[in-house]
Image (cartoon, rainbow over all chains, first blue to last red; front, top):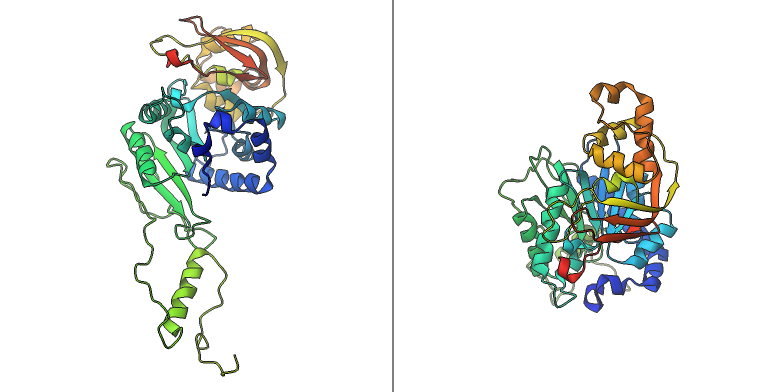
Length: 289
Length: 124
């Protein structure tokens, strides 16, 4: 991203009244947030018994993600540090309760009361020290510690994050594991810079189900896979480094068929519509072309 | 803020051991109807602190809940009780007022239904 909001100002200042309105009225953002929230809810793996649950939306902002939770029939509690964003949520008459608070100060919730937590594009804000008194590691510790306590046994927390770099991602993960969470990273569309989304899926207590694999080029998504992670060892699967190493340049004779096939495969992996390969692919055309 | 949330909130100030429940100073309470789902109410019942709920409801002007926490049989069969619990948990909104920490007396103001739980530098 050219200008990461986290580098411009602390969240309660960046998301002032104007920005809050802009954020919520941008149809593109509304759409993205809805999709991310749906995916996060999917990864929460709540039991499908038709009983609504009580969820926590961390960094709920103007309630975009909360609305998705309500659509799925659950009740929720939202926390955000920006009063302007929360005011927009009040205007939009969201169904969840809202709290003005700083997740880095700890959540202040009783043990075992929350059935699941999601956070869309918020946790990375914790990694910035916005005040001289802030020490990101302590804030992350307070956050993950209090989150672990307030989740009920077997509940999950799913965070969609935009980490600035690998170090930040590892910092977040390390603090989560130290707090007692197990789990791992799910990456959707790892090869596409545009579509790529990361979800940190954290579990507490004994885990019965396995964690889904990330989505790839098939839009139906890969079905619930039986790769069960070792929750005890807190193994993390980072699946984003599969970029092809070898670069096959078109050679002096022109673009060979192999090169064309590779390029088409790359494009397919990104999720584009590519014509099928056939005997005509890369065939020599008449010189008039 | 509804009682379902109030029942889970505790004072987060450093050094406070007995920060639950927060006392409610009700300024303005409104009622908003919510669809009744008995499964959800039963599911939440196990997590509630009953005394805190009864007291909180009373501060918001609703005194229909029984003093003692009912047992499982009532939960299964008595729908009127479930409806009262539903009303208390989900339909009463504290719009203006304050939440007070029982140990330190620190007030967390509530405006437009949103409690301000931000701690000052020295309270973290």
